[in-house]
Image 1 (cartoon, rainbow over the protein chains, first blue to last red):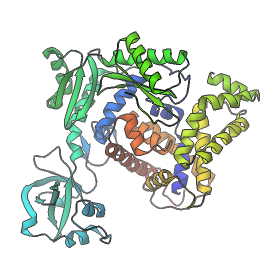
Image 2: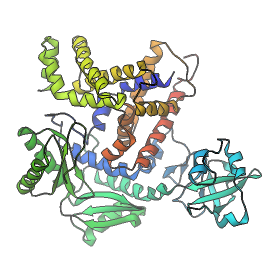
Image 3: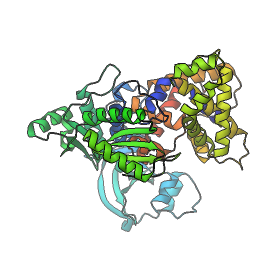
Image 4: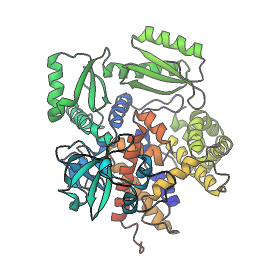
Length: 327
Length: 189
């Protein structure tokens, strides 16, 4: 089997999978979506996807028989990585050749070699060693468990650490993205609490206006941020309630979603080519992409739609491939 | 025009089927072809060939989803064209990247000419994609069916590019395990 075989056979993905992947995009004129739910589902996807892979790793572990080692029931422990005592939210990933260059430990042009050789090439003096970061409690290589990780000072101050192993040194870096995993886990619990329709799509509560990750927090937009409402969401987020940040928004997600459907239909009936429409969860507005409109036309369209539908709308115009934007 | 109507036109060998396909799915197919070929002229030719191939395939075929039926034809024609181009002429850098990524799913590369093998591989990939969680499956499809760039996927789903790459890496690892489990690395297969 070759990579070309594998690529060719990718066309075996069935229609349902392909259609699902297009939820945020309507790429042809006059195509009606089968139901009214796709924007909601798409935006839901945007949210979860925005969290990164950790959403995928999160809480799915029990249902993933092919998954690798499971840590704390939240994430897979990648190959060549470890967790330090008291730092459950951080994973340290072993350097590859590219990392030695990327973090400036070795100059560009250094011949590629195995990581032991590369580590040995880095001068480890007392000056370069910083504070003790902790003891390794879980590792993909069991022999690392119990060892101490020490900070390795780099010019850029990155989270690089060093572990003594097999008479040599191993370099690791802290994967910052993992800081989001609790926020991802929180969203997954929320989504589960929201419930789903028969097709598996999320049923958003009427006070829910969207959500997104900011740093290690899950920002929840709600039309009602009363203590009672916050308590409800915190209860749903259970042990991850601490990562929730509440912000008030004017329009519920369901309202924007339903309105976006109506606007799209309206515009298509009027002969516009809608290439895409969606709900922006960060700006609490509808985004419509219309093909081949002038800037003046999009401005007028935006004004007319906001007047008719009483929700904020952004119109973006698309010339062939998406090129210009008129917010 | 409704897809069912377009398919009927194909069945009746009415050339309006091609006009309707071009009008409704022309830009969609063109995007797929351009993602693979990164060349407008070549992409245009592949899209034109798509209508011809659909004309020849319907009947006897009656696609459930005309859109994805045409997408598959465009994809295959475009990839065949990409493969037939010399390395110098190839401008589908993204295509090469995608192929490199897929190579990570393989133990080693060996030429296989068995139709049975490829049929089984297709079935495995279909089941694998279907088994993925919704969001993971969508990212996987965007990358390896539509050949969307990582940045494009990130934009589409509101992810960071790094997130997309991590998702794809995770999915490729799962696919590799699946292929191994189902014996696709077994020489005897």
